[in-house]
Structures are given as C-alpha cells and as structure tokens.
Length: 155
Image (cartoon, rainbow, N blue to C red):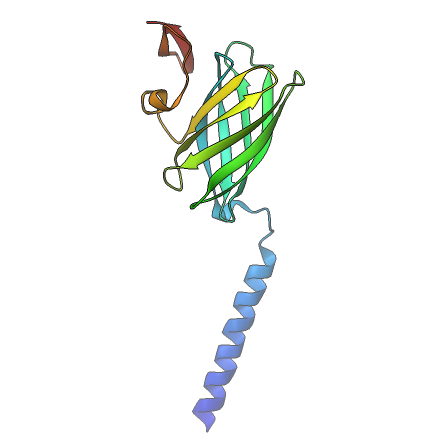
C-alpha cells in the first residue's frame, strides 16, 4: 500500500513538472524550427536570404537583392509534406508576390511564383550548385561566389 501511494505521488509530481516545463516555453520559441538559406531569382535578379520553418508547417521568409541590398522582401508561408506549400511576399519597393513550393525533404525544396515585377523561382536548403537546376537563371548566366557573396556572372 505504501509503495503504491509513493508511486502515484511520484508520477503526479513528474507529470506536474512536465506540464510546467511545457507551459514555460513560449509559442514562438525556436526549439521546433529550422532556418535554411534561400536562393531566388526574381525577374532575372538574384536574391538571397533565409526561411524559417516551424514544426506546424508555418514559417517566414526574408530575402534581399544581391545587386541592391536595400531591396528586401519579407513573407510568410504554410506547408505540408503531402501538398507542398504556398506563401506571399511583400518587398520594400512595393512589389508583392505569391509562390508555391515542393518540399523535397523537411529541410530542402524549390518553387516558383509570380510577382508584380516578374516571375520568381527559388530553392532552399541547397548550395548554389545544387540549387541551380531548380532555378530559372537568366540566359547566359551562372552562379559565382565573390568573397562571401553569391553573384550571377556570364557563362
């Protein structure tokens, strides 16, 4: 009888601690999120940045032009493994965009979209060389690193 009471008390205490620990983690905490590099081509212009995805499939994206770093775009997306994802972007110059993407894994994928500037293609979680087949690079261009920066150069 004494062991049963002790066991029940111990289990109740453990359950209570787990409940309190879970309540102390804010909903926006990054414990269940992942950030990956994004490489995008927006109407022939190279943009780079990051996307942060959360366990529930929602996330944010932030990219900027390599040619003009003041030109930045921010957006949100949702995704599922079965249906892929979709989202929207709003850029600092007023350009808006919608996009869809396919998840190749939980950390990698690619997609396309349309903006008021022109077509969009992007890939996330890839090196530039791995991303290139998934992107609509401008004719006669390829990726080339310049210091710590990625650029488009003539073939």
